[in-house]
Image (cartoon, rainbow, N blue to C red; front, top):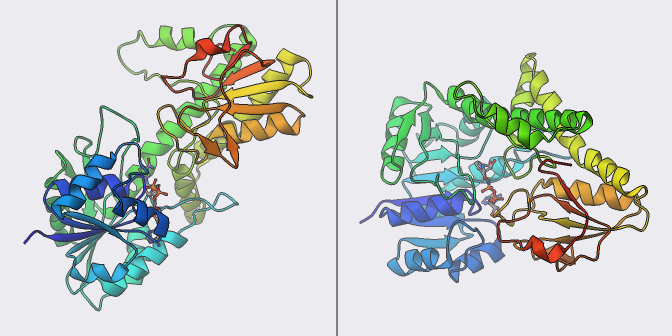
Length: 392
Ligand SMILES: NC(=O)c1ccc[n+]([C@@H]2O[C@H](COP(=O)([O-])OP(=O)(O)OC[C@H]3O[C@@H](n4cnc5c(N)ncnc54)[C@H](O)[C@@H]3O)[C@@H](O)[C@H]2O)c1
């Protein structure tokens, strides 16, 4: 009989993991507290762009996948992987409530000697100091951390060919975790310790936040200087070593890049270490929507009663994910200055009770945030365009 595993949290991270494990022959139960989501998954409907309805239906038909809200099913599983959200609270501080709740539920049902793997992004020390404390030592449950690196909509790098970092609190937890992932991931790397890979995950995403914020600051500099930042990046990219291009935007979004670095800076605060680059990058990133509202004002003279269309409101092209999207702040800022703002997004049909508006030339200004590749911008005719991706 195939090994039974549970994947707790069936979102952008947990669902692709569950389906990959099911395809590798594990018998997978995908557990989530969201009843509507579980209902949709059980009917073979995928809420995640990278997983098709057919893949879910196929796994259900083979009997290797089912979705459920019932945590007691974990009692039959040898491994439970936790993929629940780790967001920030309203003060931009780590909010571990979903993780703690999931660990409590899992620890209640996991049987003696099972393996618990955390994939959610967490601050250094959380596996040992929070997860292991909740689990306790009664049932000899082994614990490992393995940060997820999935990049939604990335066609080149997926769950199977993106190297996976793994470290357990014991050598045996590491070995068991390596064995598990090696069944469906091409390369699995052992970290020196759980703490090392907790920091490594935050380093990866802080690197992106800092560099994207830096190029946005350079873009502002270029705008004032009167050169196109895209030409500057193209020129610098001719250097074959020591330079990596990053591209300007209205700011970073999604559940990772704007969030994870704050887990590192919160820990830095706690232990008295500096995190000035992250703090500065956050400042620059969060100021970008206001910067673009200012550019729009400069172009139109006033924003009062001006008709503005924002095109591409998801946090990046090719996804419908609105989490932390800079378009939200930009739209709010433009409206607070009196503009009549509509938006168009081919993948985000509705958001906050509003619907995507058709593309026409009938606007005083059109602002590109993250247009999707298939968006037919020719429908905008001769409308005046402000492109937050450069050249404004
Ligand atoms: N989205 C990404 O691109 C990405 C990439 C790498 C790492 N991560 C990290 O992975 C984790 C999960 O992110 P995501 O994007 O999949 O989130 P998500 O919001 O898409 O999915 C999380 C799911 O967990 C469920 N959930 C919440 N609390 C629960 C609980 N107590 N028990 C069971 N289910 C619960 C939610 O209903 C939701 O369906 C986060 O820590 C995130 O930082 C995300």
